Image (tube, rainbow, N blue to C red; front, side, top):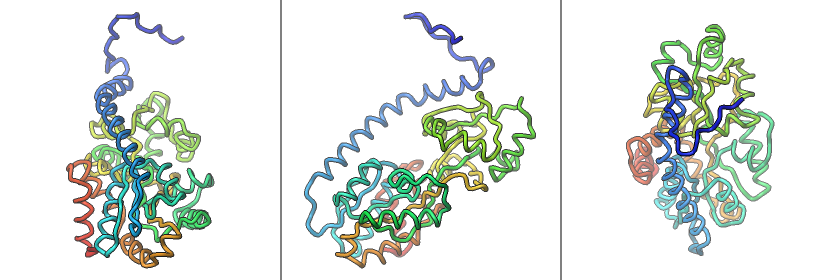
Length: 335
C-alpha cells in the first residue's frame, strides 16, 4: 500500500540519507535543478518560437539557408557551416534553435537548404526503421531513403553522438573496467546485495528499446532500487558529484570532459549510431554543385574528440559558439 500523502499545510519530512540513499540523491538533485530547469525551459521555448518565426520570413534570393537544432553541438555546427560558406563566397542565412521535427519539416518543405543531422535520428524517427544496423549500414540506408525525399546526405563525419554509459573516473579506475561487458561481469560477481546506483533519463527508462533491452543484452542485474530516473542534465550532475556509479550520457557532450567522466565501450554494439552528416536539399545541390565538395571537406575534419572539445568550450568555459566554430575553421585551414 502506498503511504498516505501529507496533510494540507503539513511540512514533508526531509529524506534521510541513511534510511533511503536513492531517494535522498533523487530529492537533492531535483531540488537543485528545479529552478534551473524552469528557466531553461522558458528560454528554450522562446528560442524555438523565434526560430520558427525566422523560417516564416522571406529569404534572400541567392542565400544558402542553414538550419540548426536547439542544443550546443548543433549551434556550433550550424554556425561553423555558415561562417565556412561565407568565407567561400556564399551568401548565407542562419536559423538556429529549431526542434528536430521542425528542422526536418523545414528541409522537406524547402525552407532550409543545409543542415547537420544524425543518422540514428533520421532512420528511427523520420523513416521508422527499427531494425538494429551498424554505423555504415545506417548511413547507407538513410542516404537512400532520404534521397527519395530530395534530401541528399553527403559524407559522414567522424562525430557519433550516440548514447553511452559513463562512470566517474575514480570509480572506473578503481573497478578496472573499460567496457560494458566488463562492468556487467564485475556487477554480477559482486552479488545482489551490492548497490549500483545508475542514473538514467526518464525517457530512456520507459522506452521499449531502452533500459530493459540494455539490461538484457549485457545481463546487467540492476534492481529497481539501483535505477534513478532524472532529467538528462541532472544525470551529469549526479556523476560529477559521485552520487551514482553509472549514468546514461551522450558521447560528445562537453560535460564528459568537464566532469572527468569515463565512457564505457559499448562492446556489444547495443546503441545505434548517430553520426553527424551534412544534408543538402537536392534542388540546392543542383544549383550549387560545389557545395558537396566544400561540405565534405568540412565533414572530414570533424570527429568525436574535436566535437567534445568544442562542446566543452561552450558549455563549461562559457565561450560563444560562433567564436569556438571560427577557431576550429581557422585551426584546420578551412577559412
